Image (cartoon, rainbow, N blue to C red; front, top):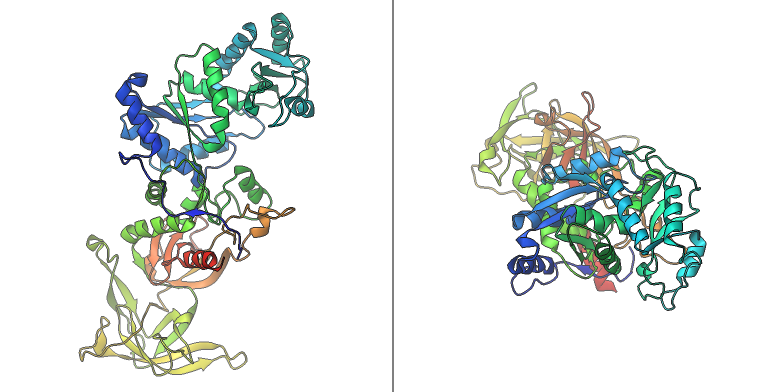
Length: 577
């Protein structure tokens, strides 16, 4: 474990006196003052260059939730201005994820590429008004002329081209006359500005790459800082909610709205992005993890993507609850992943049916139980939900119990099965271990010979005697075999991106993030469970049927343990610092 000092927040930033976070307070004040005629319209504008992750969920819940709370609207818009990284696959996955979280955009589904013609016209307007120019400086030269944060930049030698020359060159850029990277269209703002974003930023670049929607129609593409505010304005957005890294871009956002003829004037507001312990949320790094084979894909259950969480068994309700819990803050911090897992536990505790599942089976033979006899005992489906009812469990002479529920030489306060010790089989009978059978070559325990008390059916003794241990089980001849995948954190450091010089976030990858158990046994009621079905394996944790399941293969993922052991580790680390 790492000893790095990384602040974590267990609760959201304190709300205002009104009980609202600072964004909601702004919206309320705008409505009360009649700004935007009292309208509230937000948008969620992801780039279709990867799958959405838990950080995007925070933004989705904020943008759509804010609109719902104030009787407004929220648009879904693909910010698809970079054809080298975007695809239809990612766009469709984004739609699915937003819907899965429980939100709907009705007929307000847009693409930034829908506005390419209008954005081109806005660029021409800036050129005609002397506020944009075509620059021949290339990447390294642009950086040299831009200067440093503590010293002004220098004007490009092409900054004072005539309007006519700029119009001509931009037209020739549009028709593909120049090679990639040879020219850009730049806004003419202020090369001496202390804000680097205002030092004549690029508006258009040449890129001969087919767009996944518009094909070869364009070989010049607008930059994000140009596209975003104008797309907001074209959609009549009132409140444009961005994460803190765009705070320094806000003057540029406003500059474009001031200098072109837009139909509305949105307001950009920044909030702290989500940083989650033991997790990386950089889309570039997530793509690297997939491409380098550290995970099986974007939907690997160890990934913080929504599709990965869905496959692992997380519910949309739990993720929305988590986003509500952490709130909206103005300062960056790291939120403990324990909060997310706790939200999942609380949700699944209410909805997940209980199932008997033995992950590391140890055979038990009840010697005084009649051979060939099978009876049914009644098991509760969910003690948190009486309406869930009960189910029958087959009970027979040969059972499987959890290997960890037996100790030949038990320590103090070990109340499970041991030689000559009596325990309760949940919903069934009291049994006592009489003999331990071992493999003669390895010495491994392979079977327990036990007896049962037929008077204790249902797990209670009529003479009132008590037993300290209750264990789960399955009938050997009725159990269904399963492969169970036990997932843990993908990284072993609280902040995987806090690395020493020359290091990499990859150095923090957890080699024990996945353990695959073959030959597990689950009760027969689980035999027909379909991918996505969530249950609690009693005493084990919450589990979900994986998409790898087929007619002859049952694969189950652990969603989350019953208790949060990592939270204890984190607290111990903090105490040791």
